[in-house]
Amino acid sequence: MITLKIDNTEVTVQDGATVLEAAEQAGISIPTLCHFQGLEPFTSCMVCMVSDESGKLFPSCSMPAQEGMQIFTSGDEVVEARRTALELLLSEHVGDCEAPCVTACPAHMDIPLMNRLLAAGKTDEALTVVRKDIAMPATLGYICSAPCEGACKRKDIDEPVAICLLKRFCGTDGEMPVTKTEMTGKSALVIGAGPAGLAAAWHLQTSAIQTTLTDKNSTPGGTLWNSVKENTLPKEILEKEIQFILSAGITLKKETDISETELEALRRDFDCIIIATGENGNDFGLETTKQGIVVNRETFETSEPGIFATGSVTRKTKLAIAALAQGKRAAKAAYQYLVGENITGETTRFNSKMGRLMKEEVSEYLSESVEYTRVNSTAEKGFTADEVRKEAARCMHCDCRDKEDCLLRKYSDEYSASQRAYDKGEREPIVKHMQHGEIIYEPAKCIKCGICVQLTAKHKERYGMTFIGRGFDVKIGVPFGKDPGEGLEKIAREVVDACPVGALTVK
Ligand code: SF4
Ligand code: SF4
Ligand code: SF4
Image (cartoon, rainbow, N blue to C red; front, side):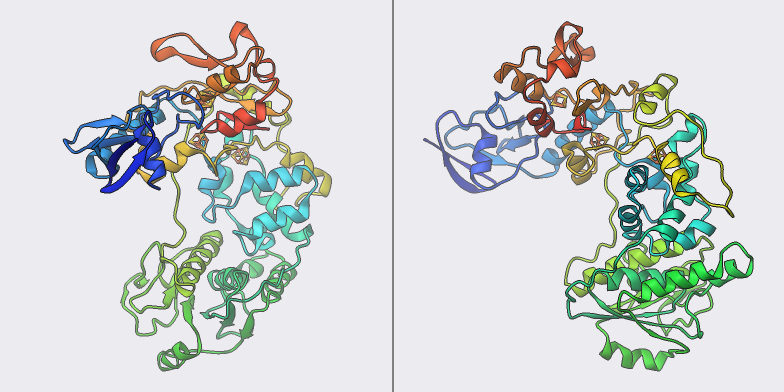
């Protein structure tokens, strides 16, 4: 047995154990991408770096634990070494974690998932996906300027997917019950029932916070009524969506103008308050600048704890989708405050971006889609159910199938790694190997960890996966020019689960 200290915690391990295994035994987690339980250490990712008492850095997965060792798993140099290792991996990695349409949407709605559901005729499920981020999909479907379509990758081939009209169809034709969840017992007041206030109230109420919404006018909707007056939005669409939001159990108090003194009293009646009174709203005696009430840009907190402000009362915005997105984000921060979590607001995650499609990638992306051009329609006409299925099928699944579980994304986030730190100015083209019935292999996302090579050898796959070539140009592939359909006959699922990134994924 060997006894060593890791981060000043003493741990005794079997002879032959590595420092990584010793740390695991001591309950100390060390990040690694190429280590896999039961396989030989391969030491290719170099993310598991630690230091000893002299400050020397080494990878913990292949270093045998030695008697009396003093190991440190944190500290500036260790963090820097891990970040560098991640940045080197990223410099050779090509892929989009999130589809570019999602990044461009102020509400970060899961557009590719909506499209996949619509293409499969699942309108109700698609509506549920949309409403998670956008409280008023039908209304927005009429008036949104659709920044998502400006970023859609399909426009590199022909025309962007008609995301906005597809979303509108979800709102007009989808049915979604408001599931009444068990309430948390916390209450919120949202002052102002314009787009930001309606969104904040919807997201709070559906997060089990009993919400009261007030407005000085006799009808909620605020500036959204301007679009009705301009004939860009049918009145009944707006009315129906407002009614749906309220049906979640929100208490509406119309013609209620709340003054500064009342705010003090209201603080005793509600656990938190969100001010969403629009451009000409009352500042309630809070700290302001020329732009409006001063808020933390991420968390929407004002100078008073428990009071949040969102929408044009903090920053002028003409985009309805931006107002709805801000309402949602303020609701998230208010929720965190109410349940005693750290108030971070909606945090953005590391997002690998591959940029515009290269010529040779067009056929790869179309292999997950259809070749015809955008289905004709106009903003007035919208789509029929058949047209929706047809248009939604044009979406190319630009989001990575591993975006939730990918370790490269997770650690790049944790270590603030930059994708551009070792940018070579050129990149490998994306190839999608779809020959296997169940799985997809994308070599440009492979980090050459060797796990699939070892696993397929261990399980005696007929061909398996192997290293092809040497040095910097080494690639992972199937030997003898075979495809992944032939390489992964027996343990495809197991290999997909073991792959630390989105190189091998289920279709
Ligand atoms: S493999 Fe990971 S880092 Fe790469 S695009 Fe997919 S989720 Fe992002
Ligand atoms: S093709 Fe689909 S997933 Fe890709 S950017 Fe366009 S809408 Fe988004
Ligand atoms: S494809 Fe194989 S070598 Fe590449 S990242 Fe996945 S498991 Fe590792």
